[in-house]
Length: 194
Image (tube, rainbow, N blue to C red; front, top):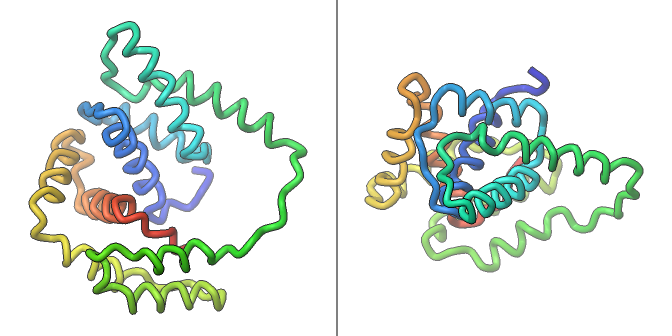
């Protein structure tokens, strides 16, 4: 393994699965081979933008051919090709000076969705810790977020669908938890706190 697997692997995999569902409405059973393909992409540190672009191209090509997509291996060639192109473009590129890395936090708080208003103080605290160079403890924040939406019917239905489409050995509580958190972070556009 090339990186630490402190939950980031599940987050990455779930975001890719969610992208395919949200953007293209494509859902299929996620077996161990599909999980291996997704995990391999995570191990290779392939940026999600590269994967999303590859997914978009393959989906469009297969729709023109009226050919259904049934597994993530269908995207492997395009992901590999896009990743190689990405790597070759990135070599020797001058890096722009970083701007205010915390501007996204401020913008998010200014347009905080009403459904997350109950977390304003928590978010301000987490963002303040980041500004001070500290590593915030996300556990309490994540638990409050999950508790608030625990009885949400649509949210529970999407989670149940996701779990149903995973191979039985992958239907573990930690994957369900990561799916729920990633769904909420994506739905409300919460900036990455890391």
